[in-house]
Length: 86
Image (tube, rainbow, N blue to C red; front, side, top):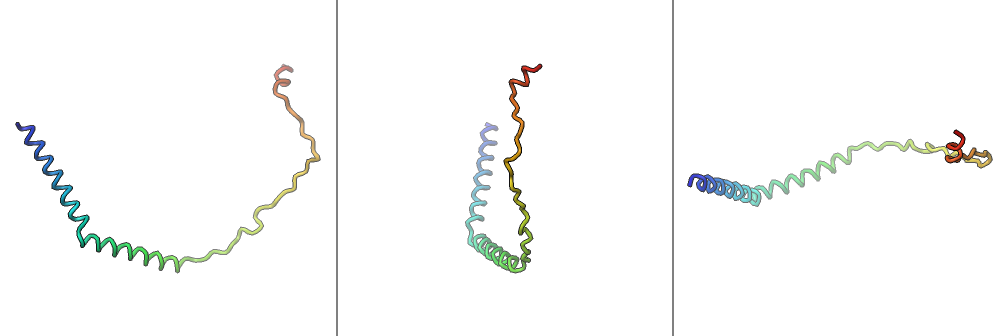
């Protein structure tokens, strides 16, 4: 009996909690505040983007290309021959 009353109280509290959250979330006052905050954020972004400094491009000729020559012969290594020499 006591267990059922405890569960009933839990269910009532949870449903009231969900009801009041939904009521606040879908209220006109909250919707107006959210739209105003979106508008303020967009205005702040526009103001901040106008104040950003433009940096000069300092990456010209940073990469130096080296011409590779195939004149050098590389010594070829064979793994199995290295094992056979031991």
